[in-house]
Length: 139
Image (cartoon, rainbow, N blue to C red; front, side, top):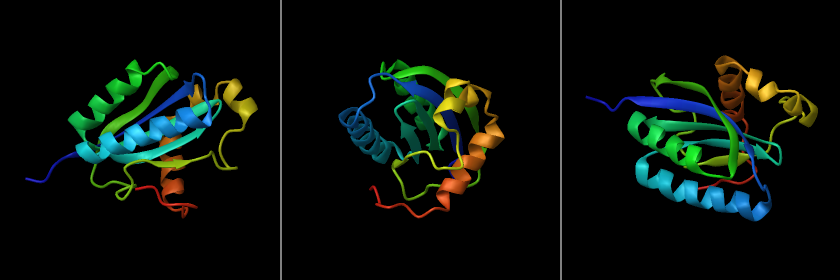
């Protein structure tokens, strides 16, 4: 019987955001995700994180538990958790990208755009991102 996959999307605000912090998050995430068959993408900037995790449900929820306990994330909000027939980031232990121009600007984030985002809207952000070639491939 094939393994059931799930996807999880959450938002948070970074606490103490800087380049070394982001590098540490990505390095750790990529190593752990590779061990646990988790893939996904992190959209980030100084005022927001929007992340999709994909993989076996137990491993994805375990990963989310680590994020909830990580003091670099503030105001963590689960937007979506559900089964999926396939991954949209199958080759990425963690793709990282800045928000695209068609996403929320900083004023919209301050006004609550992330908290008001529907699961469908967040999913469409990742679906669209999966179709954009990255500037650099993270393995």
